[in-house]
Length: 321
Image (cartoon, helix red, strand yellow):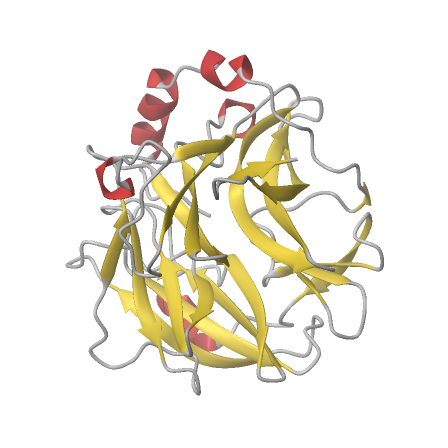
């Protein structure tokens, strides 16, 4: 995910955020992995053909493949060249924060195209029959935002609920939003209501990168809070709330609404694993996994892939193992 702060505002936010609070808690380390560890904003899926694919910010949607979920190989990019329409939103054709899913015999890859500090942004979608890099067909814009909108169309994530398809998205600009998609085209329904799911009380809001998972009777909204993309000074952390409806309202375990700044702290930086965020969730053989990036304090703040199992408590809350 990319924040939409100016460089000056980001510097102020980092200066005001207490770094000691991240290190004060004890969190489990990510699963040890080998091979190509470098990644940012990972989305991971177990392929129907076997093995795993991970896509990320960087390149023309950077790709990693693994046969066992432990050793990862650099596998190029989702696309050989940026689709021409991307340049309307980003001079370098650099997409951000993809989301991969599988439904109705097809892999779907959502992604955002934007530039730092603006909400002149677009979410696009591509499909593939295999989910492998180089096999994607782009289908253009799903949903857009302009400078007159109070939201930012980046960081997409899709969930199917009771036969309807929804996309949550958002970064700063008043926080996390959701729209309904046409399941045939994968694009926003004309005139769809833009639901508001999470924000923080004061600008710059500093919540982005949503992902929703259904477990039992609840929907769980994961989001990244605070400052991303600053190496070892990043303060990213993952918070979560839940709701009995996919469109909310979402609350944390104290009952505080996520629309009022609530959210249980699920994972924060600890030890060498700084600025944990850019998260997604995938399921593998009945086990839920959290995928995210962290900045490696023992490797000059290089962003790397974090994978942790998720567990569900008896009272219906989620924790990282």
